Image 1: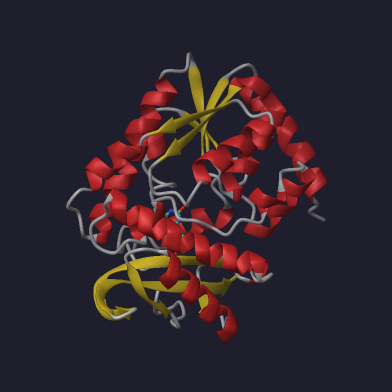
Image 2: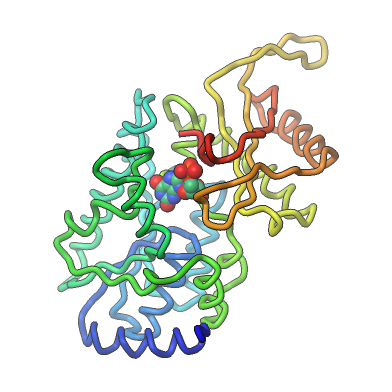
Length: 317
Ligand code: XMP
């Protein structure tokens, strides 16, 4: 029977043999998969693993600083790279979802490739690819139909001309979490909701600007903090907010306002392939809506997404 302890032991042994004294580079995202993959490789080869954490300017509020701190606490050899301005520049004026995804993917590869090649003698690219990613990239992003381009699976290895090491590519998400617990990775990383590689860039509908990112970071912060405070965070598979390219009329005091609308989305799912919208308590939604409208300047209306996947996807872009 599969157990995380046996998996860790066998995988670390296998990695030692396969990697020897080679140098490996790996991009951390703050999520469960890349963190667990990094810790496994770290256990096998220590300082020969070089981790890179890119701030694409599309992360959650304070996420870059917080996550970088926890990685350092885990003993990982990690370099933080703030590339926000490069991403914003590439996104300027783009409104089509696929164009935005491609731009974010392209800049990520450019930034990562440059950092990776600054490390001497790197032979391997480590990736946190898990089994459903392998399946989804075959069935969804296959030759016939691309619903959404996933930039974390494709592209990178070809461009980098490196051998790829993916220690999690036979595991499902819950198994990855169990392996992470065996490796004593912090619960705050293991329990994190999935977050898309293109980040808030695909939750800001229409063109992305630094100011819109700031607004959405605040909205997202009140939603996620609200879920945690209410003990609902772990009940929900994934949650986030979308900034819509729509303004609506409101009233504040005796002033007319004309400001942005945000949509909150929370779903129950097993693997992200199908999802049901969560029946969050009305009282909770009321409180979060008040927090957002009263505290986030530029937003005067909050709506809740009650669509399931399929036919709606989890992300709006
Ligand atoms: P959709 O919107 O396709 O999302 O229903 C399914 C799950 O995948 C996440 N997602 C991504 N994750 N890179 C990622 O790492 C991406 O480009 C990407 N696009 C969507 C989404 O957040 C959800 O968990």
